[in-house]
Amino acid sequence: MIDKIEAIKQEIEQFNIDSEETLEEFRLRFLSRKGKIQAMFGMMGDVPNEQKAAVGKAMNEVKNLAQSTFDQAKEELASAQKKTFGALDDISLPVEPAYTGSFHPLTQALNQIKEIFLRLGFNIADGPELEDDFHNFTALNFPKDHPARDMQDTFFVRKSDDENTDDLVLRTHTSPVQIRLMKEQAPPVRSIMPGRVYRNEAVTAKSYFQFNQVEGLYVDEKVTLGELIETLVMFSKLMYGSDVKYRVRPSFFPFTEPSMEMDIWWENEKGGQWLEILGAGMVDPNVFEAVGIDPEKYTGYAFGMGVDRIAMLRYGIDDIRLLYDNDIRFLQQFES
Ligand code: DAH
Image (tube, rainbow, N blue to C red; front, side, top):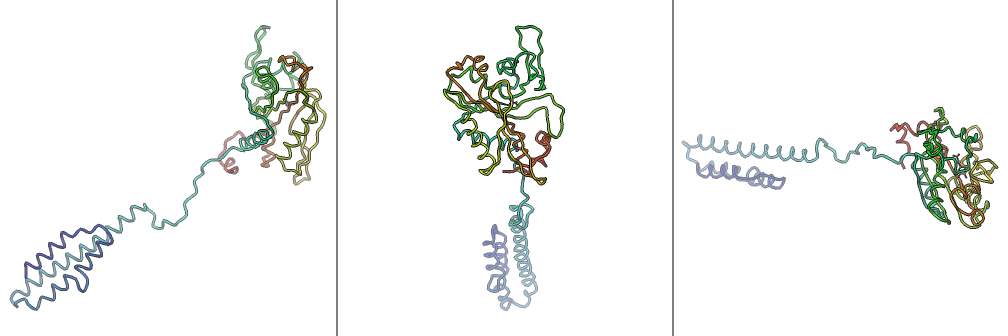
């Protein structure tokens, strides 16, 4: 009898519990009503009286071993399962959303402008932010000492008294890219030129020392003012919706003749107001001459718009400085 008990004991010790299934197998084999422990106690009747005490003790030990083996294995399985889920008990709980970043409102506005002009047949060109006086002013028909140069609040990087050395400036507008483009490429030219520009202005909610423009240029034979206006109207409709209210006013720029500005009507709580969104005009023949294009053969139109203004209108931003602070609380509002 003692041998049989010893055999069960060994069987228990060698049983490998590594899953819910083997745990249940163990329970059935040893602990259930039809299991080996119960059967073992059933043989107590065959044990001679003088051995009953010793055999009973051995049986109880085996029974306790089976029970504690079972309990311990069950606990280990449960805690191993917890570990695979980490500290979470309920894996169906929603997770904290992580901020994955988003496009800056200026980038979003710029992307939309680019998309519209790509659809209208323009390609994209760019030029340097550090410009010389020739490209930023002279070739654009700003005569030396012309008051229009003062209006541009220029940041000078190098001022030169030597006639052969040009002044260097942070470009005050994207129009110099027109000059670079026309010097490099014979007509037809049909490009937009996005970029950052700089002006030495007092920083306020409405003005900043840097901002972004998109320049446009179309040069070919027989380009007309009518085409310019039609293109700008098309742009406004695609940008602001087909019911946009717009107007075109005469203006002045040294590099275009005639020159004009376009306003759009901006509705707000106080009723609304006209806001200037761009300057434009027909390329002045003096500009063509500066880049070696024959003004008798070619005509062209040009325009320049402010991206910051467009983004501010679009998103109801009333302080331009917000666009350059990179405050995450501000930027998170423009997830697209
Ligand atoms: N360069 C002008 C500015 O900075 C904007 C502009 C006006 C660009 C008329 C043009 C244009 O190309 O034709 O205010």
